[in-house]
Length: 306
Image 1 (cartoon, rainbow, N blue to C red):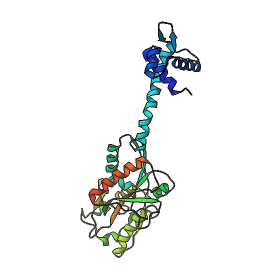
Image 2 (image 1 turned 45 degrees about the horizontal axis):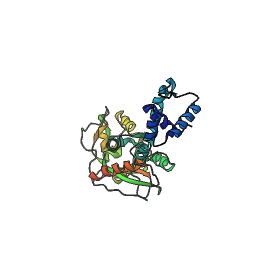
Image 3 (image 1 turned 30 degrees about the horizontal axis):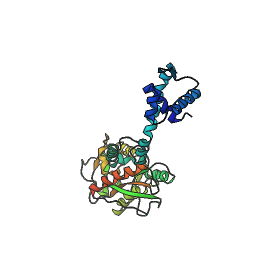
Image 4 (image 1 turned 180 degrees about the horizontal axis):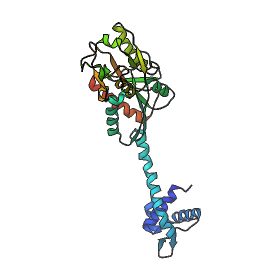
């Protein structure tokens, strides 16, 4: 491997074409500079300079090699700044997973705010259900994830949690049901076929929906299960049943489906950010700063669940 100091010796001599001036600029005497250039030429197997008593000139080979040397030296000089940017989270990679509903609520504003503050960080996004995200984080994969809030005490001790958004559930119903935009009565929902997340994929969300029905004297009549909210709304539009979805899903329009409020008090769904307590990635530190700021306007403060 060629020593970087020899590359600098060559570059300075190529600029000055004078051993004395080059040695002065490099802070050395002329004999060691001559020895360094000779050693470099021997290592390369070709002369870099044509020397006479009165002049020094680049050989065609030296002239062609000079741009490569300058690029290499510039890259070496840039290493400390690159290291600082990586250390401070201004560059690098952030691996973020998210539930499908977050696309219509917390995810866009978080990613936009983070990208504006750290434009040189690569953001890798992966959609996954809450259970898959938690398993991946515990396995050391990814940096953080947007999940449905777990029940109190339901998060592994290795993970931290920050609430980001709380929103009511609304009913996604087939347009064929009629009744316009009137709130959906609990007794009507109890009688209707339900489209729902399978419980292993999102236990907190599943229990929120079934608990609301149970609180009004009925049991869920699950007709279909799906792990993607877009799929659930599509099944609703096909007339296969209704679903309870976060209010932000009103931003997802589907022909054949409409959104209606629930009559009375609606269940509240919380979406939050989860990450490993032991994670030290600088990009995650920056993302957590942005997430905490985004959570504060709604009055939601950070809470950690054991």
